[in-house]
Length: 134
Image (cartoon, rainbow, N blue to C red):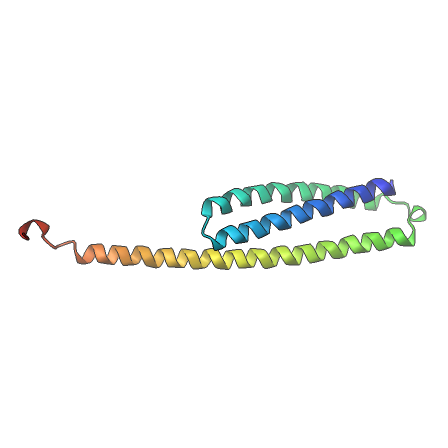
């Protein structure tokens, strides 16, 4: 049972790496203003996060079913390491998400200013009669 648990933990860590890579891609696409790419990769990351959540729930159930007499000190060290990895992963994801939100907020602000500028110019020339000039 402990071996199956550790296999699931290894798979879980691999999925966490994929989700982190996906977050890095999202941030990169946001920097280059590839909004379609951001949306697409965000959907992919959401699917990964759902899989990760299910796998983590399964791992937690397996941990709860462990018999204390079957668990060695090395096994406990592996479980502690996994919990630390979860914490590190969570911090990285939050950091990348904050960066991405800041980038997208700045782009939104720039777009809003550009629209306001265009609207202002349009209003300024609205009453101008183009047909009377030769």
